[in-house]
Image 1 (spheres, rainbow, N blue to C red):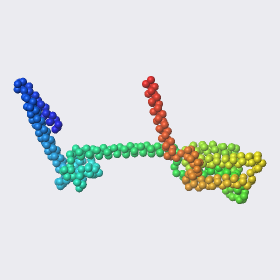
Image 2: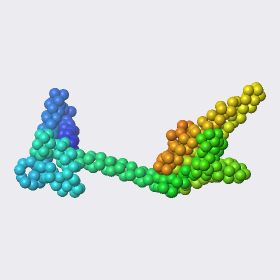
Image 3: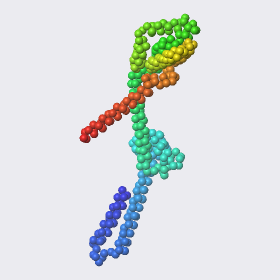
Image 4: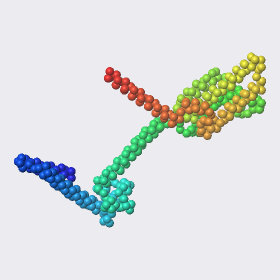
Length: 363
């Protein structure tokens, strides 16, 4: 408004000066000094008008500001408290303001630090409005970010729930723990021949556990291709994701232990063949000792795995084997990463397909 008035004043001064020129004869044309004086007088007049307008607007602003201050100062104590500021801004801006928002505005304008606003601290209400709008924008941004994070968390929770329904990685029940130790019968039966000398030396034939194991071993030996059948069956069961993770983990552990058990037999056969060809067969004491050591190591391993499983914990302290099992029996987190990688791969393929289609269409 002030700018428009100044421009209008300038135009009026210019028009008066031009009218004087048009109405004058050549003889009556003003001298350069006269023109300069007229211009200076016009400029001074415009400056005076501008100063007068600015002073008038300042007076109006102060009056308006005083009115707003008085409307906020409901108890008429000459200052605006936090509660008065909150109520006044709520009425003025037609927007609900909480105490925290009012406190932020108070802190920005309370230069004296007395917890209230005096008239000189109560700046133009437009500044308050802009500050409040800035606060609201920041709060909306934070709320939108929180909503986006909540939505993302909800999607991730839904994915996790879907994965949980698909894969039984829940804590094992008592039944799951009991079932999880059954796969260890396979490496136990294959390890029994290594312990024959140990059993004979300590006369353990009458032990109920040994007798039961011997009976199972004879039954196992009389079934054609029993080892191969067990291997195939165990692999099929591992792929059954409805089986508890502990059961699937121990099935894989039993397979790996049974595979490891093959190597002592191979090494023993090779060593026996080499030494016999050289005419110096391996002494029976060394053969029996190595067999007994193999049986003891496997017995300790199976004992650890059995106790750990009955306690509901995965027997994951076996080096190298544990890493191989995790590749076959991923956890929920690992499966989620695999699923995410699969989604990203599918999205990339879809993007590449669109780019190829666009290139083909341009051709």
